[in-house]
Length: 219
Image (cartoon, rainbow, N blue to C red):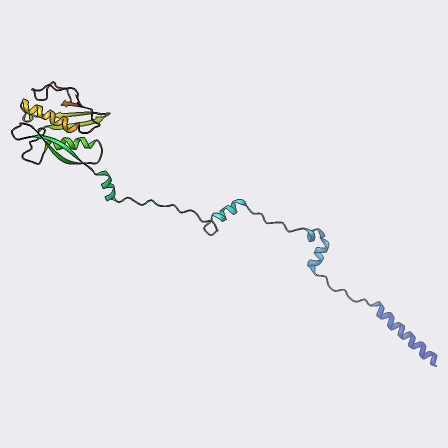
């Protein structure tokens, strides 16, 4: 009886042991990313490719207002005021101008201030000063003579005048007129000769009394 019980106990023990050995523990689930990495080992070892950087993009970024580099600012020149331009253009000079006395006995010298914008206008202003003295004791000898044109080039001055009949003087007055013109114009050192034309033509005498040189030259 005891043997049957012992045999049954041993048989039950082996059955239980066999069942326990036959059941294997379930493996833990493998993550999908790990499985993909195992299937593609080359992807795991591959180094990440650097991002392509275009040099032009870098240059644009450096020159952009938001970048570190700043664009150079253009310096604006101060605008010249109209008053300054006028002061630079409006030049003045004190010159000697020659007239005669009321009796036409001698030449009289007077200092006059002339104003001009351009260098060539200086000589025209000097001729205008010969036409008006502003003093009753100084009689202008060219007051009634019209200046049609005045040119100056390379030391040579050319005056083209129109002389009405009432502008004609006697022999003494004619010589004073030529002397007044030459003394006034030759004070400018750059003037070497004076060509005096009447209505565009050379004449032997300005008023019919004194020979007129063509051109008159500096002494």
